[in-house]
Length: 299
Image 1: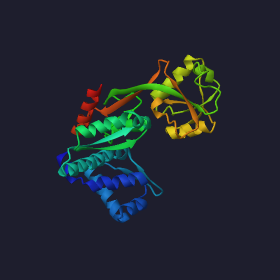
Image 2: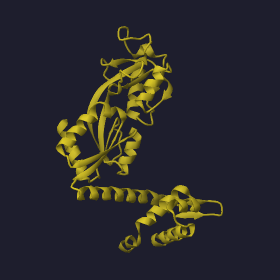
Image 3: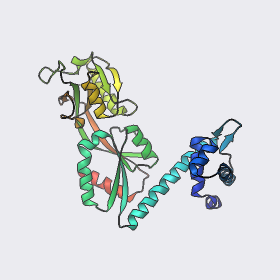
Image 4: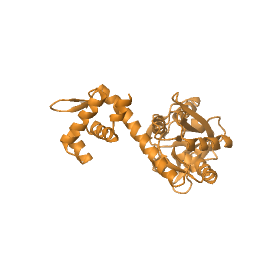
């Protein structure tokens, strides 16, 4: 293994991944700014070092072999870790203490995250953080690959390598067109809206939240008719404003200034939506440990 790793170079992985994406030597060579012959030689060199054929070549196409499929995952992980490590190194050379990559769902930024990030910056001024808005599903995938250090999402259905901490709990809120017949004064329960079309977050993007909505509706004797789906609050509000349906969202997403919609906070039901901080338990980023410590103190 030592001799194998001594022969591998970063460019081998870079060339391999571009070809694995394009599955075309000509297009891959153009993207890499090298000749097709040079690319072919480097791929053959990589296959010789590893002792496995990575691509199956025919006159018509190029496809990944089984070994190639497996290497694609590892090569992506290697280059991601290398990029992170070099960014950390450069930042620390300049006097910083580390970098934390943070994923979040949109609603987390409305109420919870700004205060947390302000407190984190105050306590650890030499730790830099990067933010990226992603769906629950995409955050979990990025955490698994260690492309993110921590995520703030509405799910605790996690893989075995993940840890989580509930950091925020809030009410659900109905979103109705401005001229809807149901108001704060005559609203009794969600059963009054059984015949409406619903605009919801997709199940595949937010299974826990979607499941809460389904349970709430079933408890009132109906299964909601879903007309549209979106992961973005502004899109949902615009669709409701246009009369294309109604919605149920976390209360922190409420925007009372930019849309002609009506909000009714469901503060008298047991169902609440929760926000979780999630991280990979095998992530050894010391800057992440500082953020987790702050989260636990705030509990």
